[in-house]
Length: 214
Ligand code: 6PG
Image (cartoon, rainbow, N blue to C red; front, side):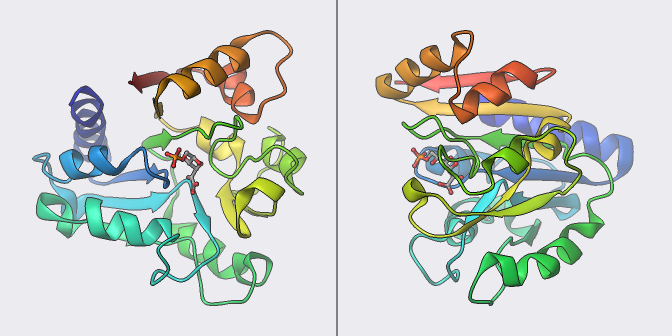
């Protein structure tokens, strides 16, 4: 799979340069096959830290948990040696847990090496949902917060998300989408003046590799 090979190359390059690599992946259903293939890529996974672009505020026993999916599909096979940094802590709300999450990701001193974004049919990416209570803050490129809580009508449950600024700093940024409906949404987001959250990525990314499959 081309996307998996490309990500593996970026991780190898980071490990060669710095001795470690950080990757943030998306949840949802689209990356399932990618995770299966990526988990079999030959590289020194013991030097890789995996985290999430965003997380639903549910424990990892919940089937909505992105951490649960990453653990089941990505942190397997050759990738079983990777370290995983979850974005969920056991507090009732993301607002209550965010300080602990910030402590956890303090080890992230460089920009992320690899970020793999997904996109919803409403044009959200990460947890940048239309109508999100902190959408403005998360998209504000002058905001130096790495992660923020997010609540939105279309989000299902409260979320925590890396901010746009943090994600755009990644050495390699991918957008991975599947299906004709998402192609249509992406086309809309590419039009000048679009206020879909994904348009903020398209407009501001220094580089973005888009992988679409039917
Ligand atoms: C999440 C995600 C989110 C996801 C899109 C696409 O936790 O929901 O990280 O941003 O990438 O919602 O999800 P699907 O792949 O399920 O369509």
